[in-house]
Image (cartoon, rainbow, N blue to C red; front, side, top):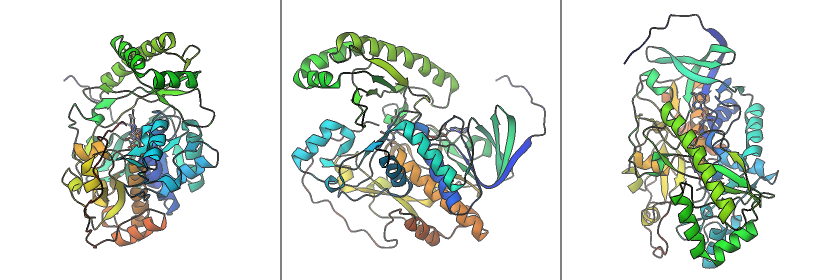
Length: 471
Ligand SMILES: Cc1cc2nc3c(=O)[nH]c(=O)nc-3n(C[C@H](O)[C@H](O)[C@H](O)COP(=O)(O)OP(=O)(O)OC[C@H]3O[C@@H](n4cnc5c(N)ncnc54)[C@H](O)[C@@H]3O)c2cc1C
């Protein structure tokens, strides 16, 4: 490989902070807001002009999997605060609380007919459909009110390392190359961008048949007569399937989802999958941007010409940031693996509980996934944490537990722990776990009874539908 040697240079220090968070997606929002609310002087660096990551810019506007198979809400905290703030503007929809966990067949069908995210394992679950644009404003409010100093249009390029200590981050922007110095650095880039430069161990193997092996270029089509489109899909499913097949043969996508948000009755979404060699390879990202837009036009042209209801439709939006599902994963203090998905016991350092809903009978037998704080800690750099989908997990755990609410929960734990560690004068690795759990519980994070053995065996009815996972 041909290389060049760059000359050494002086770099301006833009700011000194307690906690520096790189990446303003679900993980970064969780981390920055929690660190600041717990008293840390916090800086957030985001490469784009908006916050929310895939949840806004990727047009992935579904916050799913909030309740478990018993209908109990397991992910609350900052995720619920985001939803509550949206609710006050009628910018979110979700199943009624009294229906969460219901197995009533008619009710389940009526929710499934609205959108399949509302149903898992023959039950109604709590999944929220959110407005991306209002979310961007709300997330700005959340970091602003917490006192986080945010730099948008700023690309975190490198951690500043002194031996095994991270002293801050270099970032590039229209203002040039600058440094932020910090006592704790949190990588919330989704892709673990800081890891290779901090000499931190990571892996990136993803089996090609996994959901997370795919990039996406989501887009929205507006001006659809949905009554007409839906009655065609319902009344003539064979003809609909035939047209969908022809669209795919022509190089497009066959299926759409309808937006359920108020006043979006004419909007449909096209989510998609693009296999790739790597989701952090710039040539692959460029290829999918080109290929994705071509496929978008092919799909749109076909639907407009052939699908009833699409006659006056138009492409209203393609995702401002390419959909990345997974890339680098930390090999941290504790790596969550497929074996942990077969276990029903909490960890001593549990910082979050995730409902397990996508694995059919396996999920019924193991309905909760406990997450240890150690899965956010690196082995060799005590003051650098990972709070995003790059958390320490094997490909199986990553496949099921890297969604928006999961990443907010990682952030909430990492940000809170960082602030508490700084107050106690210890490194985040040595934070008082019991005190951290107490503080998280105070912030509305459900946690298990630590030290108490879970005695659970599924004895309910057999599943009537096969598992499916579309994220
Ligand atoms: C098509 C698709 C469908 C999905 N469906 C769902 C779904 O239905 N529900 C669900 O919950 N999840 C879904 N997911 C998964 C989910 O969106 C992600 O796993 C989740 O958003 C990860 O959060 P994160 O904070 O780790 O990373 P991201 O959401 O990727 O956020 C990372 C943030 O960091 C910023 N950033 C990255 N690198 C840098 C850098 N070097 N410097 C500064 N900023 C940087 C990015 O711009 C971004 O804002 C889907 C994903 C895709 C792609």
